[in-house]
Length: 121
Image 1 (spheres, rainbow, N blue to C red):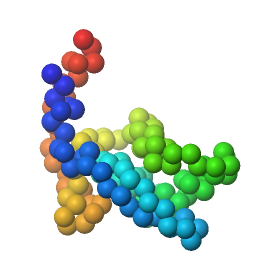
Image 2 (image 1 turned 45 degrees about the vertical axis):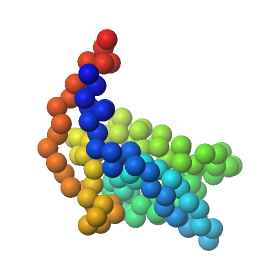
Image 3 (image 1 turned 90 degrees about the vertical axis):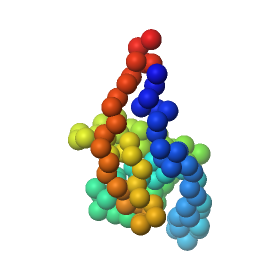
Image 4 (image 1 turned 180 degrees about the vertical axis):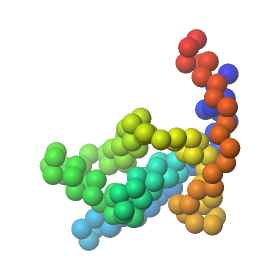
């Protein structure tokens, strides 16, 4: 029924914990591989490493709200907002990156057919 969702490669929703140094303090963030891939893509577009971009988001969030509550969830929402406003073809996020060659390099595979019938009833 919802092939787009259930046929997702399990590596996409496998979690990975990464350490990020934020102003000298090492913080660990646990996200699914897909979210790390999206963060990498955004960072690359901004001319930064993923870690630099995550620190920038943390700093801007702290400046705006004074504190960071549930940073991992904030990063997930940021990724979804990015994908929702993405102006190009984001289908490359539907397939996992080749994490064996490089942790954040993606092997682009053919787009899977989309069956969204579960959304319409």
